[in-house]
Amino acid sequence: MFFSPACDGILDARNFNKIAPFLSMSKKGIKIIKWSFILSLCYNIIGVSFAVTGHLKPVIAAILMPLSSISIVVFTTLMVKWLNHKSIKDE
Image: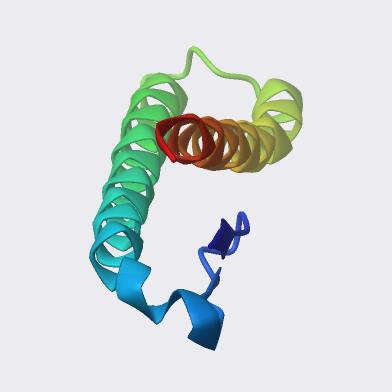
């Protein structure tokens, strides 16, 4: 079983008897996606609140916007690697 940061799963036909752990990891992948959405939502709510109140200059906002995307990608990648490492340990 292998997982990639894009949450694609590949199950070899010879390992079809491992469908239960595969589905379990898929459910954990969905949790990672939900946490990524929550993290992104929090980041954007905080950023918008600073922007609306005038405490965030446009230049700073332009710098922080790509950092939001980068932080979500890094978070997702690290969580998937941790999940993959944990599943390999459990086997």
